[in-house]
Each structure stands twice: as C-alpha cells, then as structure tokens.
Image (cartoon, one colour):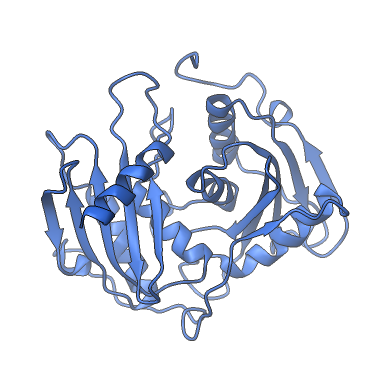
Length: 294
C-alpha cells in the first residue's frame, strides 16, 4: 500500500492543470493488468474544459497503446479530497472499456494519506441504469502486448520515421466496433523517443481521445514534455494527406503554450508519399486562451 501511494504521488507532477498557480486539483491513477503490468496516468485539464481528460482515462490509454486489454483494477489518488465527488462520466469511461474488452475493473479512490474514500468491487455495477451489452472487439482476443515507443534513427529523416510509426500505430486504435476508420499519430520528443498510438474512441463520442491528442499524452505521461514533431495518418485518406481536426489543434496549442513547444506538424497520405507540413500558427492563427501563461 505504501509503495502504491508513493507511486501515485510521483504521478501527480505529470498532471496538466488549468490553473498554473493554486487551486488546481491534480489526480493520478494506476491501472493494473492481469499481465502484471501497471499503467499510470494523470489528469489533463483544458482551458476550454470540454477537452478535459481524467487520470483514469489517461491510464487506460496507456494500457490500450500497449495492446494490453486485461485491466483488473484502477486506483486513483486525489490531491484535494475535501468536497470530492465521484465523476459519473469517468465511471462510464471505465464501463465502456469493460464492454469492449471483457474485463471487470475494481475501482478505488484514495486521499493523500492513503485512506480509501470510494470503492467499487465491479465498476460495471456502479451505475445501475447504465448496463450496455458486452461487445468484445475482435482485436482483444489473443492480443499480444507490444511497445508504443521507439528510438529515433538519426540516419533517417524525421518525416519518414513519423510516417513509419504513425502507420504502426493504426493497429493500436481502440474503436467502438470492428473495422472502423482509423487515425494514428506519432510524436518525436527532444531526447529522441518516438511515441505512437491510434485514437481512443468513446461510445458517446465526446469522451473520445483523438490520436493527435493520444500520442502527445503518451509523451506527457512519460515526462517527455519537449515534443518537437508530430505525424498523422488515417485509413480514410489513402492517396491525399489527412488533416488535424479543430479540437486537436486547440489541444496542441494549449500544451505548446504550457511547455513552450514549437511542434512541426506532418499530415500524411496512407498509401502514397504525399504529405503536408505545417506550423501550429498556420493551422490555428490567433490562438484563443483563457489567460496569459506565466
């Protein structure tokens, strides 16, 4: 228990909070897999609030990006427990994960002293009126755990490596049904690590994590905040370059402002050598922010 609490506390600095000074409520979550692996995530707040991502969903994203679907337990540490309430949307996120994977998740929430403030032996039974029928994705059966990162090869171009690993990330998409359209993103960090994964789809759509957000989150959760380049590919755009959607442009603008990033953006065609290269200023001029970052 002490080791778990320490591990979760170490995850709190990974949180991306809306308020820079005071008032922020950071959370850290760890999900445990039947494989023996554990995946830690932290909350990512958005200036818009609409793009907020919970620490639980960050942790599940890391599991999915490793093709590890047998999550058995989720534990969340809340930095400020006074007045804390369980978020039904977060619970629904975990239920939807179970629907697609056949897993059953135990859920616990603890405070900074390790005291349990909420527990649910079976997350699927937490919301009595939300019991979607189980529909396990075909990719889950017999899935083999795999890595979600690679080391940059200095003998090859940034563009070619982003395309290569964005293509590999297509297999890591977490859809709501088999054979759905796929988007995948690879990001390069300053230390020469490439993270790649596909989109994490949600049944009600609003809780989806697009791949343009998912791959940067992998880097952020590994404390690699200096993202230098991003590449996007999609099965919907085979012979012409795809484009980065509006909400992902906002997400990238926010993390770029918070971490002083200058990310080169590449949009690829899946089956040809066609691509487009952008700066974030070109894609999102006159960027909106709720504050001036300090």
